[in-house]
Image 1 (cartoon, rainbow, N blue to C red):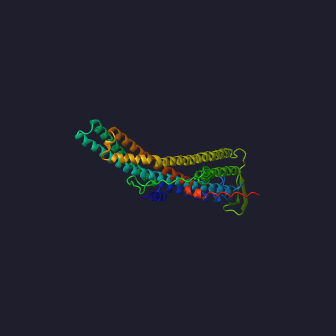
Image 2 (spheres, rainbow, N blue to C red):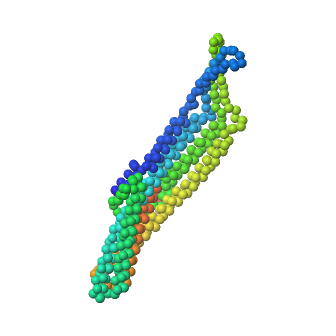
Image 3 (cartoon, rainbow, N blue to C red):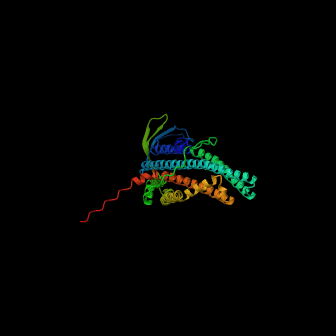
Length: 400
């Protein structure tokens, strides 16, 4: 699959996102419960004398509970705030799943390319070792040079085998990231592409992050929910009123009594102080967590952007200064008569330097691709759109 197909599959099949979607549905169901009125109560009592003969009394009443303090409205508001928070939590989880899937896919791309690079270098080292062996048999080189080239070839081959093992582990990670069983270990089509980062000011990056980051919106929604829960706790301190008609009759005799019933608690001792104090504390906690989340989120975005710019500078330096020298070194090693201009130890050093430089370049490309992908997921839009959205500079006013 391609990177885009991996992300699409994760969105549609990852079980964690399906679980979070069910949590949103559960929060919507709690909104229905919050808006329901209390059911009326029907009570039927009978009474008969025990120490004397007499008729049986039958007493019935119908009770209706009248909510006071706007409890129903406040509970609905709290449930709506919970729905908003769970929806934003789903957005945050979705973004985390996409970020993990994208990072895993880029890692597979990196290790696939690393395995190909190590195979090319291993072939080059094996060819050099074979030339040394042939010349040693012809008494044209030393035994030490022959052993050194064989060790170099063995080290490069071990690096290639290590890259293949890491590639299998990366495919297992990709399977887990997109919601596939570990028996299916997909490969990733494509290659690591380095796209230059446009010169966007850091302030604009942070402003976009503050607008788009779901964890910031989630923390603010959690604050609103805690405030609504506190309002519900304060409203619950007001006792509800129970009213209803009442009928009394004596079985076997004429005459019925009818009246009414009014019932309410007298809030002398329990005025819901504990829940109100708890709700006030939760409001303070949520307000502090908004600041914590803002600092952490904006710091992560700033660090990713600055590291991306630094990685791009290193890549530009490599393309300008290091790559020509690495190409010349590889050309020299591949020449059949390299020993005529280089000593065997120098050829070994060149091979070691070439391996290190090529792998370092691949690491830089992988790091650049990972950082850019993660940053664009964090910002919710490509970086080039932020550059295009920049306001045009105002023309200077002519002198008066």
